[in-house]
Image (cartoon, rainbow, N blue to C red; front, side):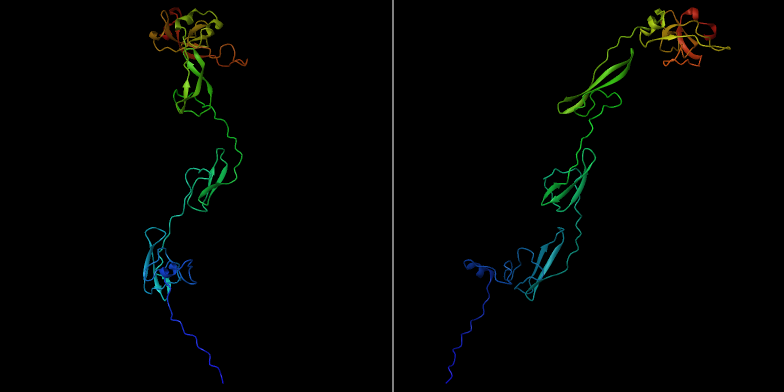
Length: 300
C-alpha cells in the first residue's frame, strides 16, 4: 500500500516594503530592490534609468546638470523610464587668469592649464582630486632688475632691490653725475633722486680768461672760440681768439655789460679734434657777445 506524502501548506505571498524591511534588526536590501524607492512616492535621489520601482505610472522630476533643465522619470512595468532627455551644453571649464598656487582648490577635474614662470619657461598645472598639481618646474634664475635708461622722476615707482643707479644730469655747470636710489617707502618701492647743487660763474667772467685752459676751467658756461674763414660781404670773422659766454645771444640785452651781440665766423674745429685728426671745416656762423671794439658795421 503506497504511503501518501503529506503536502506542504503553501504560504501566502507578501510584499516587503522599505519601512517593513528597515524594521528588522540587521535588515539588508533584498536583491533587485532599490532602497530609495518608496511605495507610491518619488525617490529622494534621481534613479538610474532601468532601475526597479513598484509604483506604476508614478512620475518624478529632478534637476539637471545645467541648473535650469529637468529630468522626468516614470515608473513603467516596474522600471524607471526616462522621458525626454534635456539638451544641455554647459560651458567648458576655463583656466584661471593667474597662475594658481600648487595645492590650492579647483573644481574642474582633469583641467590642464599652462603658464609662464618668472623666466618665461612654460609650466603646467592640472586639477586632480580638487587641487592644483604643478608639473615639473624648470630651473630659473631671472636676471636682476636693470636701471632705467633715462633718469627716473623723483617719487616714481621702482623695482624692489634695484639699489642705486647713476646718471648724468645737464646743469648750468655742465653735465654732472647724479644718483637715483630705489628705496622702500611704507610698502612701496620708489625712486629718490638726489639733488645736484651748482653755482656756475656769471657770463662776464668768461671775458677774463686769457687762455683756452683758463676758459675751460670756468665750466660749460664759457667757450674758447677761434677766428674762422670769412669771405665776401657776409659776417666778419671773429677778430681774435678768446673766451666768450657759451649761450648764443639774440640782442645786446642778452650779453654781459660792456659787450655787444655780433654775428661772426668762428672755426668750428679749433686746432684739432679729440683723436688728433685735423678738422677740414673752417667757418661757422655764430652769435657771440664781443667787446665793442670787435663789433663791426657789417654785423650791426
